[in-house]
Image (tube, rainbow, N blue to C red; front, side, top):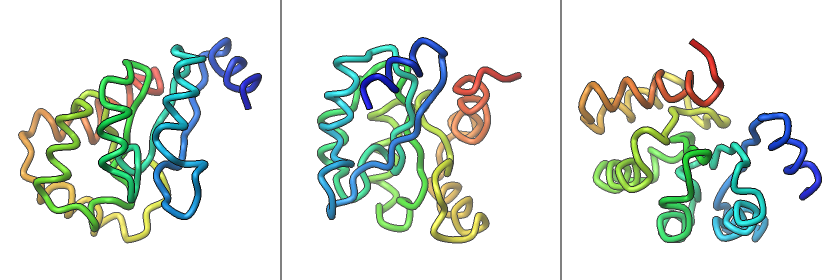
Length: 140
């Protein structure tokens, strides 16, 4: 994949990584760190708070990974308590979070209700639900 990552950097395209599934080592957060060490300009999205089922590893490895690394909330809010989810949002930085970009396991209504139930400030909600997406995809 390294030649593809190099091409993505050259073309300023992004890649989404399914992160953290305990069944496979391929999605371990430390593996993304290895890629980012070689391609620090790679624009990527680390799904599931950077490490579904490996959230502690994600926090250790990926917090501060750089301005080109974004995280999403998809298929995770049902498994994290509100304090854990909010902690991770602030650990990675609200400006690096997107709402539900990877495959939702539940309805959008359930996912948005879980997200809004975190009771984050409106300014943070706006970032995660809209503004960060626009910046990540260079639109509007």
